[in-house]
Image 1 (cartoon, rainbow, N blue to C red):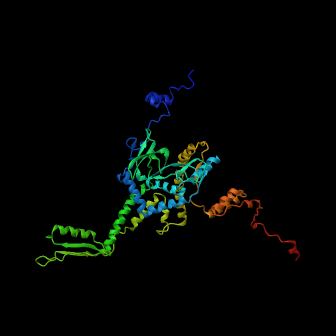
Image 2: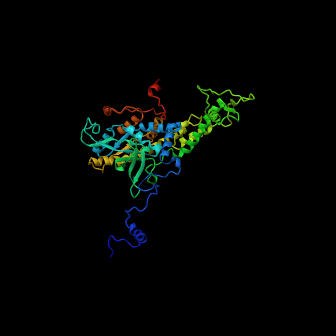
Length: 460
């Protein structure tokens, strides 16, 4: 009889071991790698195939897109303001750990909303790395590293500051491609400082190949942004030339090269502004011909091609890459209310996924580490949950309630449901005293039953 734990020679594990050797014997051993393009265990990421978007140069371009482009700025501002208005909740069965995590979220040296705003920088760069700094909760202590609203001696979050993306020089990996640490190089010392992943929280817009730098949401709009930027520069120069004219200098061929170079600089730098004016020598040759003459060639003030339409097209493409093209509805005489509603709902759906990325990092790494360092049980670890991004449409909600009520579904009395409906309409919560009052129902008149004449009417 074969042993109970023996493996059949025809099993896949046995056949694989016979072909590839003992390395494949244990299914717990990781054999392959993700294929992330890097050199060695401590190296830069080289996944980007456009050289201008890789490394520090790419981070500078993404920052320029964020800070200089009005369309990109409007999109990111809309995302930040929408996320700042979201209600975050900590839910869990263990009331002690749930309350503790809830306290820690509001007991940092910065607000939770400011932390979320910093985390959203991952949208621009593709990732956002934050170092967790702990503290011992010792009440109103003079030492800021121990100051807390609570005086129970537990370990809480002091702050979770960002480590700027442009200061992350390289990444440290283990042999299986897992992230070990982020290597930061920043002023004033410009020394390599490794920050272990156990001391940090890594937020990414994407996890393809286990890339610690994720992928910027502006990546697909780079080409549109680049072409739009060039068209805007050409448009500005063209308008200036249309209004100011094209400068022309007539120079004698025998003039010294030094003066030729100076006149060329004048042609390149001439502008129509409050400091306009050109100083030139009045020089003639022996025959009385003027050696230097400056003039402006005027234009008709129109261009054969209007670049407004291409610029607007690129703006819409930039917004479409992040499902935010609703910001142009009403600006270009197109779009309806129904279309606006559909587009904003789609944008809200994308925001929910972003909030899910943030909460999942805290639920998988931040909160369990906080409980572990305090010796609290991890089996009933609470979870961080983000509320709705947009408010409910009261008209649609009332139609839905009327429909299901007409179908016979009982809704009231239900205190939880009533309080939720009150919250959607920004009404105050239900008073506890109102539960003791009798419920008054207003029944609409039944128009289907015909009126019956009374006996008194017959006697009259």
